[in-house]
Each structure stands twice: as structure tokens, then as C-alpha cells.
Image (tube, rainbow, N blue to C red; front, side, top):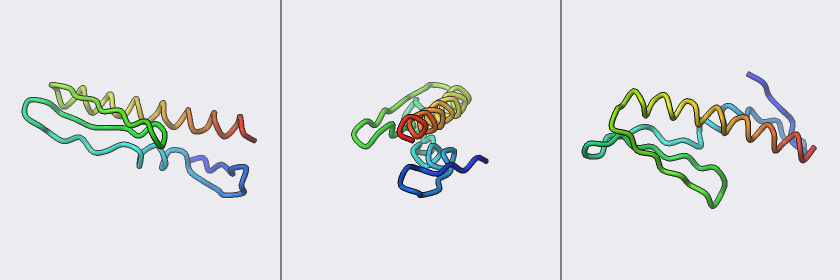
Length: 77
């Protein structure tokens, strides 16, 4: 767990922010669906036929989002 300090002086944990940006996986018909909020106006929804694939892709996308948050903070600092 790495806590970073933003340019405004607020300390945040990028992994918790990324995790809270993703919805839980729900089954809708034959698909397992979840969505991720990449930015305030960019919400992406993903659907898979296998729960295992949905779970692993959600985990990967959360890791990518965490990396994006860290990169953006480094750029603005």
C-alpha cells in the first residue's frame, strides 16, 4: 500500500481509488457485467460469458487504472 500526496496536499491511496471506481460483477442473462469509471465523463462497461474471465479482466483493469492515477499525479507534481 503506497500512499501518495497530491499537489493539493491531500494524501490518497491510488489502489483504493481504483478499486472504488469499478463496480462489482453481476450476472445479467448469459453475461457477467461490470463497469469502470476511467474519468468523470468516461464510464466503460465490459461483459463476459465466463465469470472467471470477468473476474480476471476486472482485476487487470483495476491495476491499469491504479497505474494511470499514479502517472497522472507524477505529471502534475
